[in-house]
Length: 136
Image 1 (cartoon, rainbow, N blue to C red):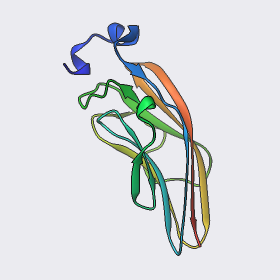
Image 2: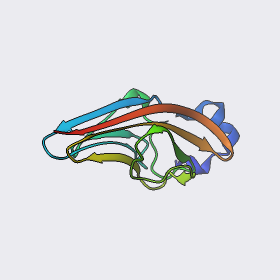
Image 3: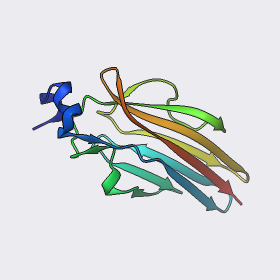
């Protein structure tokens, strides 16, 4: 049964758990480096370190149980630092994978993001994500 088949009040009442745990993603590599975070439509959160993707923690997927047909939305806000790729400051449907990343040449780039997940107009959870990419 998909998330969209339940009324919002029931989801908030405990059938679905939304967790946005926060994470620090650091990547270092010669000449060019990339550090990123991805909220996937399947309900999981991956980190990207130089193109190697791994799930952050299955206990804190952004929605449990996972469901790929969700009515949820995500928004990333830049708190400080360098501007990552990906859309900032707008609510985006989580029916599609959403990603934010820094790509550094021979330099160090870092940013601090707040990522929020909402259902309708209600923000259900938020977390702080720190991305650091260092090309040496």
